[in-house]
Image (cartoon, rainbow over all chains, first blue to last red; front, side, top):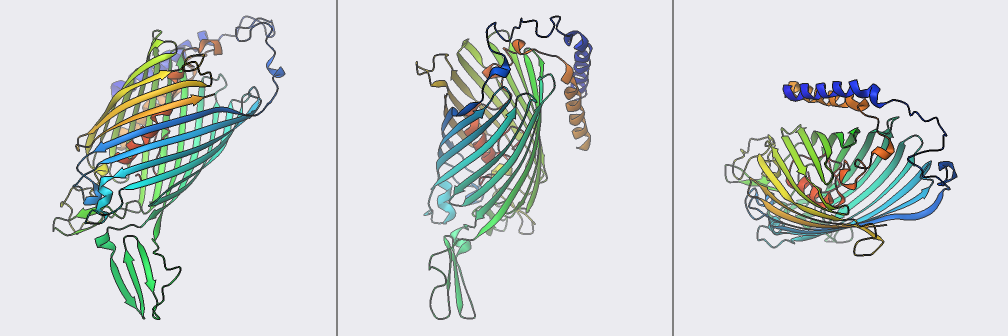
Length: 439
Length: 73
């Protein structure tokens, strides 16, 4: 750590010594008529006219994901974790204004996922519960960019709905480039206001209570209230309760060009959550043999710090690296390190092998099947909070020919990526994704 | 732990102080502006980040999810 610190400080000092040599004024006077930016005959920037509202780009991303494991939280840390998921997302960016002065953009997004989860069947002990689910998530973002000032400002809104979870989100974001346009500071404040539907395991939820002649029947699929006169309250349908979960995030980033081949970025998020932070159908088996549903604190604070460094090696190889250190108030510490090496086979086709390493310590609230004591204040057997290491590796391909992919001018880029993931908890998964970019 | 965080913060501050390291003109940024050099996730990675946030406790500092918005952590 000390060596790293001294190396970085030394490198910083060396860079500063070079500043005077690299920031000399141009020897050509302003307006001398010769510019490497602007060929002779091209109009002055002030002659650009604002553009009317138009579609700037449309992007499609589709993925197929499948996994297997043997530590499902639905069955208390044992049992199948088979999952398949098909995700499809589209976003369309509309742009208007003058790109040389002030430009506005509106990005409209829509995503639809459909998954099957084998363990979800065991919300009912007999294994008869529904195993499929669909999530729909539209989004909207408006951003205005001021090219002269090198700044941008925007707001966004987000919704996500699935059978057991509803979410509303909003954000406000800002960026400012440095005077020399080689660095950029970004900030984003984000809030999610979610509702967790209280679907309990059938054996935990099925209760009938009677008070003053009114009978309340609670099942995993909802609650019915029978009044003393025998009539049913409300519309006669079963109603599921819900519990709120709020997430507030403050994100800050700074990116800097180091030289003509290297640039870096620092990212830090402060995340505060409160409300119902578990899921009601996650079981926990105590060391007494009895079972209940997981219980977690109602607050959590997370602090991830990330660093990216990209380097253009020679003419055809790029190194894309990433490191993140993570700490949270539930006792989890984590390291994530990734390296991707895009190799340009031609200027318009690249192959990118990648590897990502991940590790985490266990949460102080985690214990495996039949290891918790009934005296514990909080308990979960969700292996996402266990101690483990994970490896993720694969390869991506990117095509972006100037005349369009397969001669289709509008399709300006196509990416295909496959990755395989393994955890030391024995969970394995694979994902294949396709991205299409239209202009 | 506080000592370790201070070291990380010190390292970050030192690296951030290199902001005046170079002064590249636009025409010198042909490599920096290459599509593969962007300091962000690839578009095609979007769903990978989602499943990682479900299966792992750590999230954030990668322009992806930090919690909330779905039944993940």
